[in-house]
Length: 80
Image 1 (cartoon, helix red, strand yellow):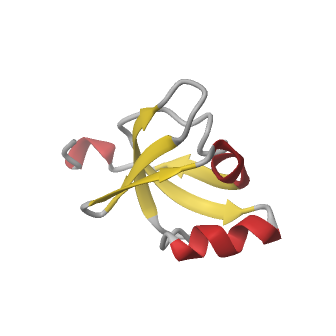
Image 2: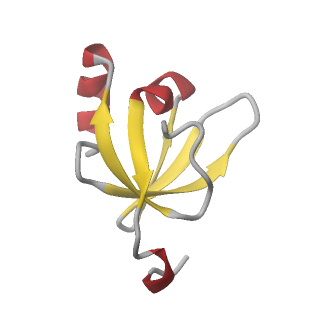
């Protein structure tokens, strides 16, 4: 699934970034394969706010669609 369609509040792991052009943008935010992120909020018609470590980042929908993620197995051990 991509980041745009992923559920809020669950710990997610970035699997890949499918668009080479957007890969550079993702890397600027420190988002790359293997990173763990959590969706904080999806603003209607606007950006998706994610949390990476202790930092919150608003990313556009186009970039969110290019980021493939999977739900991490250890969500029960992580706090919101």
